[in-house]
Image (cartoon, rainbow, N blue to C red):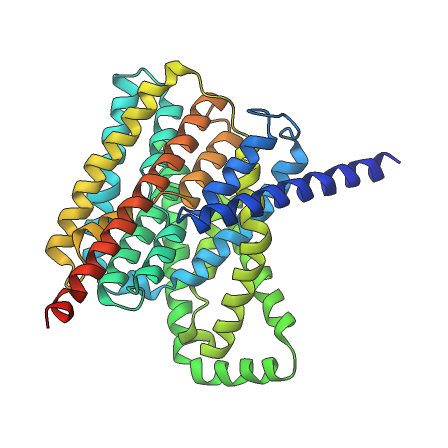
Length: 400
């Protein structure tokens, strides 16, 4: 009877979270705002911060981790290792100037000016300063830049920033010796992954032929299962090294792209993960993140305003200048709107830091609310830049 009661409770909780999250996400999408913000607000509404219908539980935390695995695996699959191999020098410059510099300034200001404890200063600054590859991908598709050289440079810079952020997340609280051991293990693994990726590409014709045969014989479930098992195995390996499973899921997804498995198989895998995540895991994960939020006291607002202004000013200025110098056809304003969109990765980092005990409820809430505010603000920046670009591009036609 106890097990039955727990199962019903969890089912009812998931049902309520999904209904409210999907509803609010649809409303936000209609008015031109990030739908994940709607999912987070859904969790805030039904969570302790407002109505208190749902409270954080170990069961919800476990479901959140499972959802996170599928979300990050999809991000890895959509990123592809080609992003890092092309225009590497550009994306490294972008990651350093637009992410690392504002992050370091923000962490130093948090610790020395606002007297935030070290672990919380770094964790909060990391969550707020990091751009989100999922938001960037959506905006690049929306702007029509996803296949362009400019789009690849911007996406690569954000992807590089996300990887660096996860490395910082699993390193900043450890001794130098431990960091060296973990970094060496990670470097060896990434090198092995690089050679595996090149091997798969060299055998792509044979592999694609075999995979197409499996697909034609209704073997999609087998290939899908193999991808998930590989992702889980690599994630476990990363956890064994003392690194978050999130990086394992991301790196295992990188070798799944159309050059290694074929356009047809890759398309099916990508669409399958997108449907599962967009309809279930993404709204569930972010609504659970909202449930974890506590009410923010007025005393924390100056600090939250500091985080928002610093990352927007320093990171935004760097992204704007990078666009003026290195982007060929994309206006700096559009690049700024795309880069400034915060979302999935920042919330994920804050959630991991909260579960690992690096963040208190107060600073976790500050990080998430700052992320939400920036996501909304830069969505407006992007929309205005796109409208201005559309008007300017049609101006000669009108004069003629």
